[in-house]
Image 1 (spheres, one colour):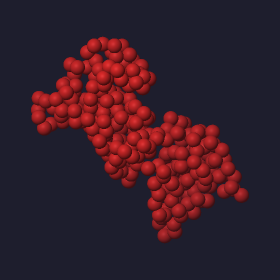
Image 2 (cartoon, one colour):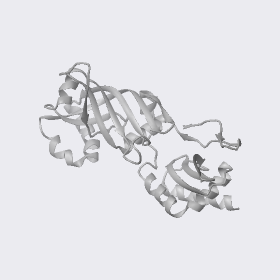
Image 3 (cartoon, one colour):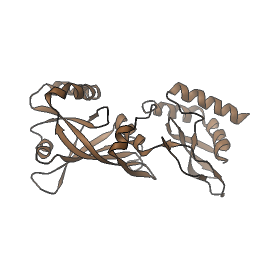
Image 4 (cartoon, helix red, strand yellow):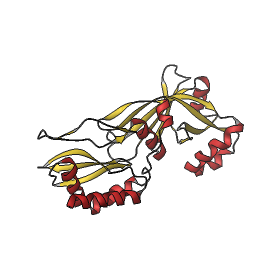
Length: 259
């Protein structure tokens, strides 16, 4: 379900309906699916009350719960055995660090029983095939976080708490892995089409425009209007699920705008 707000406001005082957007829960699942720079904060045994940070590769299960493969000798493992509470921070690796999306998942880690290891090993080794050399060592084990709460910063102006229930029920955006290619293609070859769509759907006369994000519901743009930069969002005429569907919808929208 898309998050909606009442209207899009511009400096002239006019307004246009705001396009549907992914919910915070959908954004959270998408970011965890794509992955990024990740670190784990555990409760220090040596210095009680202080968090201990570690670089931590991860994968997720079908419900989005993080899975890690760690050595019993590692300090973070010793910390987790003493106190299972931890936070996993995952940050998108693109653009400005403060403008990139990031997510903090808080929860409790537990060692995965041998009877369940196969189910968690598959997604983890698919994400980190180089870890296959460690998975068979008796010193290493899979740990899974039971997510309790989540805080997401989706970029400038997009932030909030996501319940564990909403997070587990959400799905990654189907364009997650192709979004960068779509954005690059539009910005390199179809700036004029985006300017036309801005005029049609937002009622604004832009000098130029750049697509900044795209998802199943629509896309965000940065535009220049009289030498001033501003943002806006344009919704697709229907929900899309593949790059080919994006192309077909955008072609139809541009043709309609020209007509």
